[in-house]
Image (tube, rainbow, N blue to C red):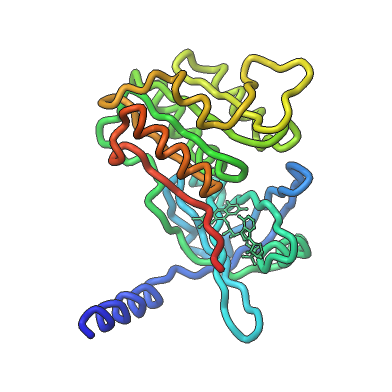
Length: 260
Ligand SMILES: Cc1cc2nc3c(=O)[nH]c(=O)nc-3n(C[C@H](O)[C@H](O)[C@H](O)COP(=O)(O)OP(=O)(O)OC[C@H]3O[C@@H](n4cnc5c(N)ncnc54)[C@H](O)[C@@H]3O)c2cc1C
């Protein structure tokens, strides 16, 4: 009984404290065959204060009920009240269908920010491993200015691994390649699970992201890993990193679980 009351109270508080706002679509950009980038204006005079790595919820009315779908924020904070996300469309998905037909000027209901998938170490580790599959790479895009600052002011190394099936599925790779090329302590690798390009570039490797982990020579006291995206990848990489000696407290996870 006590637990139920506590749960209801927490639910009520959560409802009361939701920061709700409208998003006005400004632009859609096709990234891959099934993924689009959405740029919204935040229709709220108080703006949206968030940390790189957090996500927002879209609130969608359907069948007389309100449904929520979560999306990682893909752009860094303080960009003229803009909010960007990348969506991988699912056939007949509720949010997928809505966003597919949304046109510039249309408004969507949203709330946030949410989540603890942020860089939060008062003393940065010797190395951050930032690993994502599909749209799970977007939190790291939001973190790019923060990562640049770290690289310019500390000795922290940054490794970003993006897992996709084929070269055609890469997201924002130009930005990550440019980022890594700008700093000796930054590395970016694209890992292709299905198909390699005919003439791979230095940043392109074959296999799953978790196949790269052994080659990173994990140092348990010095590495902190972030895993984001496909739940199967997050579980597999979490297990692989622990087998390589990384403590679970040094592995932070954001699984893109379906809301159903
Ligand atoms: C914290 C968090 C952050 C997220 N960030 C992003 C993001 O940045 N970009 C993004 O595209 N998604 C993200 N997601 C996933 C997103 O919230 C939705 O689950 C996804 O977009 C599907 O929503 P939908 O309403 O279109 O489909 P739904 O109506 O939820 O599902 C449609 C159908 O697809 C099936 N299905 C659901 N999910 C999957 C899946 N992953 N693979 C295969 N089948 C599935 C369902 O069972 C159902 O049959 C995130 C999830 C979480 C929890």
